[in-house]
Image (tube, rainbow, N blue to C red):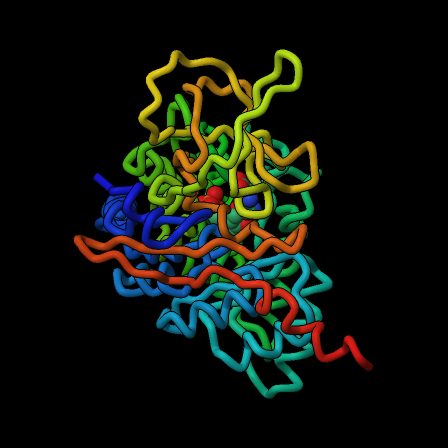
Length: 403
Ligand SMILES: Cc1ncc(COP(=O)(O)O)c(C=O)c1O
Ligand SMILES: N[C@@H](CCCC[NH3+])C(=O)O
């Protein structure tokens, strides 16, 4: 049991708390679901990019799925070997492509024909042969929140099957490109297995048709997307997930790459925030806390549900309240109509499932410093990011003030 009260007293609030033991267990469960097949787990570091968290997964043998050169450098700094780093994203700049090629990462996951042209040109200029995969958009509805769907033609990600085939042929004929992988990722917080299976089947068929024209790939990259329980969702087990994927790969000797983010981190993270005030506007009850949408954006952006646990002596009966932050936006809330007892100044609220897309989607809006982060491993508790102070927020502007 994590002693949230003690953590809040020691590190102050708002505060992110990560349970690294939970994250290890999630990692091991997913990794072992693919046993018997060569596989690499490449932690999607966008879900939680704290260096100590990345290092934790690297120590377990994880690679990294990155979506900017900044993330690639984070992975390198945290000890992920370059041969386990993948760089995806629809908008890689020339500079990012150049640096990725120089770092000799596992592959660049190319998301358009135009990008393939840039990668080839840059590899030629560098005198390199760049390993690539192509992100296929299988046009399958992942049945998730529309903002986090990525596998439909309406979404900007990846390329159609026919385009992908053309790109593989071009890459295979190029002196500067080495097509080694194929990739799909149809969305995040997936709770239905069927769309994943159908996508894998489409992509595996493409691998077979490439084999027929003597293009042999090594990596079958299934992206991330496994959903987790925020409330009462029925989720896909790693075993069923792996079995569904592997059933599409019969006769193919490919290393499976999996890019889990949320599955590893979401339920291993907590956001701690303190009650500042209770107030009422007419019948409406508000609990105003010291954390805001700049710390944890998911409820505001997706109307996402996060369980809230109140740590209080209050024995009053529960009534509905909106839990809101100090940010100057009506959309600044963690929950609406949540059942809570009457709360006192300094009572603690623990917001659950905050380990994925929590801190990383934070901002300094309203000149609010981002919260501190701590990690728990066994009996050890460690600060892994200092709270941002006012001086940190103005550091890049201050010198221009008098110029
Ligand atoms: C290419 C790619 N891989 C992996 C992930 C991680 O997704 P999730 O956190 O849902 O596992 C994402 C994010 O959606 C992604 O775009
Ligand atoms: N930020 C989203 C997930 C996006 C996944 C990346 N494509 C969330 O909080 O659920």
